[in-house]
Image (cartoon, rainbow, N blue to C red; front, side):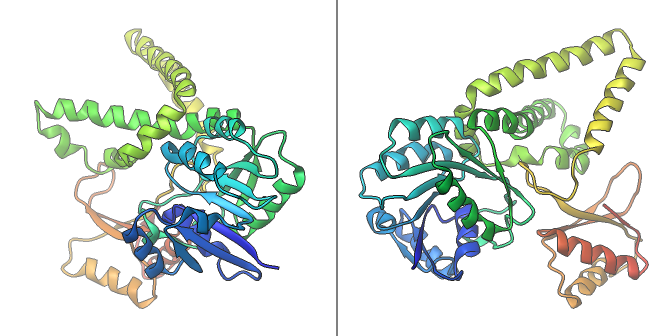
Length: 364
């Protein structure tokens, strides 16, 4: 018996889900696109068994429907699905990074025999679109599911079993608790990064040295400020109440630092750094989280003609996929540093081992 999977929004996440499921015994994956040009890209990438511009055709007889559209469009898609003759027992899920609002919407427009289970795969990429889709995207990542109490356990187990093909670790969480946690570890950091970059940008209007000297580390710690503005507009508004509380707590933290500096309290500053250091050292290093990980290594390079080309050639000969490379011209602790970036952790580890075997000093 064939299980039909319908995916609405076949971009990075939807396309990666499709690649995880396509070709598995008894599974057929149908992708929906809302524009002809999107349909063409989906078909060219080959991530689904069939693609269509018709919502009705995609949803017809589907056992599972994945809504992989932006958070701001989820309620519209849920409403449209209620107007279609969905298969009894169909499970509808999403991949949005906020869960309480969509869960409330699904509860308002629920219908007998159809089950909504919110989902949030905590995996992403610096790239976007179906062209960036990968069957490895969710591997070693947390995939959060937020079923409401009235969802039958049998339905939850069916979705969990299907998602085992992603090789992600499934975590069951209450929708409200999900938004509180993700608000603190992902949404708040994005706001802080944007505010910090804009603050320095304003200083730069009066002195161009700010931008010139802000390369390297500053660019790294604020990279999430370059996230898609429209996507993050919808995410932050969807999690508005949680974020208002988190920002008040953040202001309290900042006020604490202001007091420490005003009082010249060196012990207090040291204690704050020690406290943060201890907690940060406990965070898992080898698991994907709410913010996309960087797979970078750094190499000391001598001022020798052709050295950069030699390193790139060595990696190419070993078929190690290098996504980017950058010469860091100014770094306080080590001058003459080459940064190599990779899309997969495995590629990074292979590059590190090989370059070390050639006598290079490699840092993570």
